[in-house]
Structures are given as structure tokens and as C-alpha cells.
Length: 172
Image 1 (cartoon, rainbow, N blue to C red):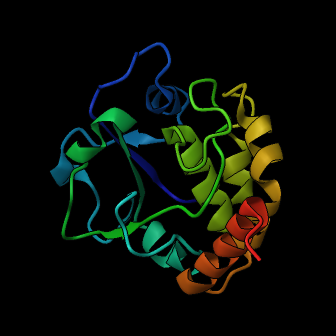
Image 2: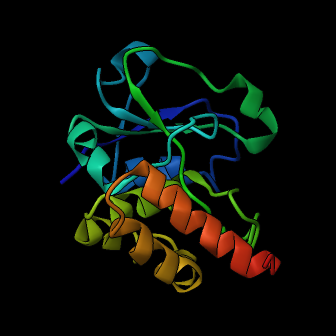
């Protein structure tokens, strides 16, 4: 079991906020301040140079952190020095706001994908009854998540990601 931590910037509609739902259903714990984020944990960041990979599980055991803020305010993303930042590989959103858009996942989609990549499928499956879009997320991304979860490291995740992107774009 990987401890999931949410740092919520309270920028979205509380009725639609997936971070708040994760907290409500016990799928995550809240870090009320940046200082409360566990040292050495994995922070999901769209600005990281490294992709999340199965070998990051050793850091994720200290915490898997999602920073909940809107994509329109992504420039406010907090940068921390005492954590391991990782980016998610290519995935498609299934939530009603960003359905089908690559790389614009909500917080719960990001955590669910991360847990699968890190080999914690059972923990990820706990999201299925709590988010009505979760089965669609697995339908859209299941094969990619399976392949990412078998990669040995970040560079292999990126290679797999690039193969998927080439297959979508049709680049020979």
C-alpha cells in the first residue's frame, strides 16, 4: 500500500474536486502545508524531466503526492527540493471536463494511473466505485498502463510512450 498525499490549492469547484473526493473516501491523506509533504516522496509534476516508472516504488512508499490545482493555474505549481518529482507518461483523460485530451488528467486519474504503474493495481481498483469515469479511464488507457507497469525504468517508460504517440500520430 502506497500512502497517497494530496496538497490541495482549493482552486476548483469543491463539488467536482477529485482531490476532495479522494480525501472523503479515505483514498488519500491531506498535506495542509508544503512542509507536511513527506521528504523523499514522489511528487507528480508535469515539469519533471523523468517519467514515473515501476522502480520509483521505493520512493513512493514514503508517499505519492498529487498537487491539486487547475490546469489554467499550472504556473503556480510548487517546486520542492526534498522530493522526487516525476511526470506521468502519455495518457488520455476520461473525466467529463477533459475527456480524450492527452496529459490533462485530474488528480484522481493521475493517482490511479500512478498506482497501476507502480504495481499497486488493487489499491488503484479502490477508485472504481468512487469515480464514475474510472472504468472509462481504464478502457482508454489500460494497454498503455499495463505496458508502463512492465517497464524497468523511466527511460523505458519514455520509449514506450513515444511508440504510442507515433502510433497515434502515424509517424513512420
